[in-house]
Image 1 (cartoon, one colour):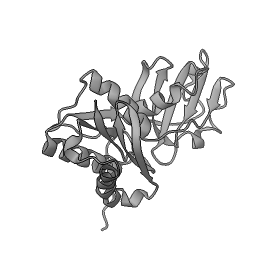
Image 2 (tube, helix red, strand yellow; image 1 turned 90 degrees about the vertical axis):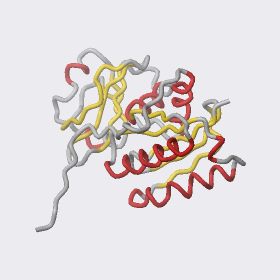
Image 3 (cartoon, one colour; image 1 turned 45 degrees about the vertical axis):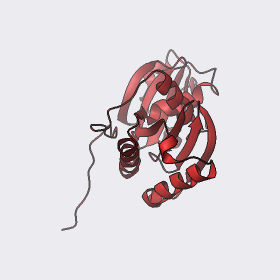
Length: 223
């Protein structure tokens, strides 16, 4: 039996779920991106209480490690690492784009290539390309989208674009082989994937784990 706490604060909607052997026991979401940090720990405590579990019952903690919101990634990773360190249990860190593609595969069986996109402001997205069998064609990258983006792939393949970054790309990527879709996504998919990682003992070192930012963080300071 594997009881895993799954945390995803990488995007606008944050999610937490408890999963047992890959099945979701209970799940909660928050759309208030500015308050992910204050929402997360009370929600974890509430989900444990409502399912009759204690923190020490957990066998692992899984976290969506990015790319995504810089602040959200730090919030989720810090919480996951703190719990794993305190409870002496393994950490499972999963690429956010990979979880999105994992969620989409069963719903988009007709697509040759899957292209999840996370909004990175202006015309930039965090993206990757996966085959329908889960293998990676293009690793996670930050990309500024224009009318030539993905042209070499679209010549030979049907591609499905999805995620909150795909909406602004629809007017630029107009090839007949491009489909813009909205498959459902929630943290329960991380729970299904983390169970597979748990069975394969694919864990991440707690001490040196960091979010997958994909690009440098820039901030402006007041003069």
